[in-house]
Image 1: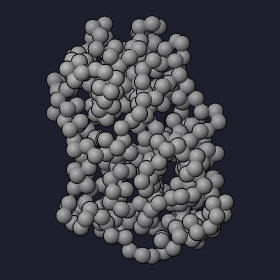
Image 2: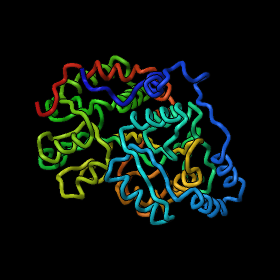
Image 3: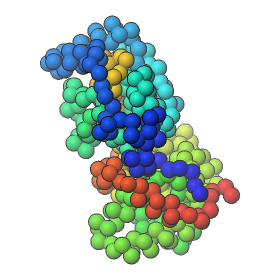
Image 4: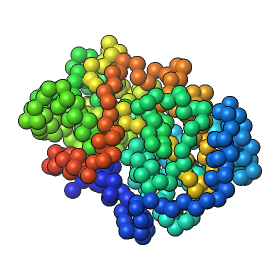
Amino acid sequence: MRPRTRLLPLSALLCTALLAGCGGVPGGQITVSAGDFRSAYEQISALPKDQQRAKALELAKKEGGTLSLYTSMTADIVEPVAKAFEKKYGIKVVSFRGNSETVLQRTLQELQARKPGADAVETNFLEMTVLAGKGVLADYAGPSLARVGKTGRFKHWTASRFNVFLPAWNTRLIKPGHEPRSWEDLAKPEYKGKFTLELSDSDWFANVTGYWLDHGKSQAEVDSLWKRIAANGHTTKGHTTMMQFLTAGQTPMEAMNYTYITGRAAEQGAPVAYLPKSGKSTIPAFARPNGVGMLGQAPHPASAWLFYDWLLAPDGGQRVIVDQHLTPSTKVPGDHSLDGITLAPFDVAGLSKDDGSWDRKYDALLRGVPQSGK
């Protein structure tokens, strides 16, 4: 059996997250009591948008000048984000890092125990959808929201960045003209044993499948392609681990990885790429949203509002995201993360309602596929 994957059904995420079990919260909601947090959000939102930041900062200073951030950002990302926010507003960031499931579980457990610890949460779209569905997120309608496109706006949370899926390859082992030019190319005999598949990317699997079906392939054709792709590949857990294998030349190619991971490795001198020599990919890319939300029961609600607003600002958190080679959710001058890439729609709505079927299908596909390095 492979390790538990990221893409769990919403019911399972909710059950494992609550100390009292699924039956502990009537109607699937966590009761929010009135208090100072609501007053802070109301005071800010009642003002014209050009006055909201100043009011939020005034209230944040009265709260003690601290922000508690729960996030699945990696340490090398969250550190510059926190430092830039602290420099801008003088508000100290105390962060809890974990994978997306852990962030969700801790947040909901604390709320269930009426001991909220997080002011703001920034994590994967699926976990943000769960938090939104539990009614624990406060709505943000500040000045930075207008800069986020419709595809990045969701009920009670907003996309802060995107992780873009594309194949990656070692340029010393895969010569120009021999890199894949479509997802279908991964099924070619020439790639037998040459690439890795990440064990938890069932959402990538779901989106590629949907794309093929939407563009005229039959279910039988899709099933045949996946069978041949699985037969060509090896598996491993973790996108960073995949990149380590790729940069070391232990594997020539990755079926998929996040473009920012490939781009950062290339900037550090690794012989890796996700774009061909022409600089333009012919493979439809899928951008998985990660989002930000502020807790209705935040201990420091004004700080939560200020962080939300700053993270979406092109001259604030979005600038830091671009500097770290991630794909921002707004237009930021100097952002080249999508150059040469054509995006296909990422099925947030469908995957958020999924009952775990895509996870089970991906498990079945990879059953028996050998692991990289073994």
